[in-house]
Image (tube, rainbow, N blue to C red; front, top):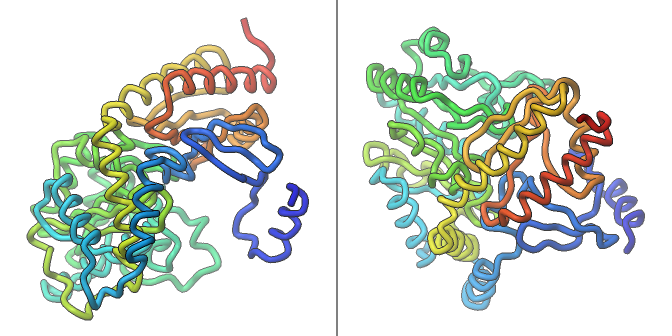
Length: 399
């Protein structure tokens, strides 16, 4: 089918929760191709999913091999890939706890909230969770309530009770939001959808100290900033603290749906048989894919690459700040980068797409860049040149 035919069927049969503009037909590495054959540099990575690149051979081989042996196994039984993956996640986190598997970031965050409330019920009847304004934690009723942005909550009232909000990177605001009913503080080490806002060391240390003082669970949402994107396995590892729980999803299995909740030793056994469950959580296929992703990150030294390539991208974007009055700032950590603009970032996203570079928007007039960690430096430089041409077209060439 051609693009028009596919788009027509999309409009006819899919609920309009997105407004897509192109039809992607195939992908490889850091590039995707639409139905007409046009090539794009993908600096969205499927919204932070393809950290190791599209259609990576090691992941394909792992999926094919596992699918030929055992594609699904009920969690009433044990499958080896799940056990090996849990062991690996505990090892690369250094928390010494255990793992619960599910299928998405929202599910992982929901599991973290449930675990916190279950523990709180037995420890003073506490149930409130404090999250940050401009955060994003998912689309289930609980996780969109946890999300500190009102636009995604409108129309779904009444929302679940027990959520309070604090300003990100503001310890006074956080202390004011905590009550004697607070059981957990949930935050992202780098807010993604909320504007690519990295936490400060002072704030992360303050959160940890407050949690220790009040016997509160510290939860880090690593759905977007985890799995090497910031140059560490987990975004919180850029700071001098350890959370009690953290969640992962998106890039964990390179596009095969998977989520995970990882605990430290203290909270490893709060969930007991029947307390929580997931039919597909930790299935052999997704677990095999995730093990392959971790191996690729290790073998190809993609943690170091994320730091190096993120710096290269930010330096390229900073040239736009110097050249164009409409480009105000560049920020981020590793290969998680935001460009703050004066005006609607969508016009820049559209211009970049027409030029052949796919990027995202984020809250606060931000253009968001999430390139694959495997994207070559040459391709990053070429993408920056293409984006420069697009900005010249928008704003006119500037000497």
